[in-house]
Length: 424
Image (cartoon, rainbow, N blue to C red):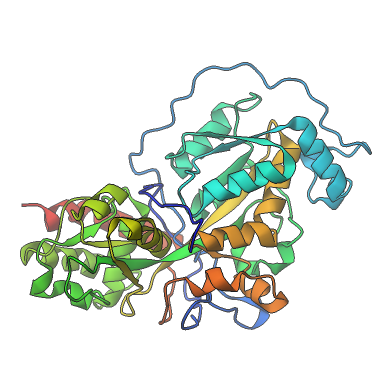
């Protein structure tokens, strides 16, 4: 499908979902899992993979900066945009758009253009509203975003909007760092995937998948069990170190689920990669677009929207990249959006959220192979891009999601046992 963003490695954070025991029933083929009765579909846990901890990630270097310029924070009808909790509260959508255009700028952070089609989303927002989007530290983590919010309070360089791992989003809301705001489509977001006051809400997500260079691998693996076969010697890689990389962490968790483990016990996943190392199948090279293109990581465990992007990106370069979501270890993750409570451009920040959760914005995630949170609602009302949906990797199985406590324990177990399992 033309026009999709080419993905790259973005080791944003370690992930960790909440609300144990909630299962989302997946639909075979293209659709993101449909909701249970009463709207329970994926726990915001499922946003899975709620990112857990900075885990040694370098804090964002923050330089001193002047205070945010004095500006009129009120719309044309006198509404206070900095405290508006909806477009209606801002005086209506037209008033919000006018105020955002007057501000003229949106400060974003940690959103690479080639991650889940963010480039097209940024360009679409600017083309529609004439608002410049400044993106700082595109490869930053959720902790970097939180650091920036805290350190730049009152400065014009502070981020207006945040794209966070769900645990970070929840924590930021509880700390009073994010503003309550309900987009027009708020009711369409499952209750388990949004803060009741709108201090954060899930947006897009994907599954752990197995990518494979079909020109270098005779028969591509479809499951974690397949990866142990001797024909895959030296070929199985992760997207980063699982003690630091969210996708790699998800890969180990998924492997645990596929090998008798659970969200209370990630050790079978660590042991699985230990077996891959012992039999020579594990490839310590961290997969990136460059290693995929060069054939250095012919089999890569990564998010499905990144692996699917590789398939499109490198097809013209002779790489036949296949993608499979393993049925024996199904694991997924969402990311969340939020507005900085002290956003220097409060109207633009709120308009950005409206754009992301419009049919246009949600379909742009879909064109980047990510599964938008409003996908079931859009299927129902006919606004879903069916062509883009049909291009998603096929999914079967029933994923479940751990609590933050379970993931915290898994993180600790992983940090203690990973190096020993794959070293030597």
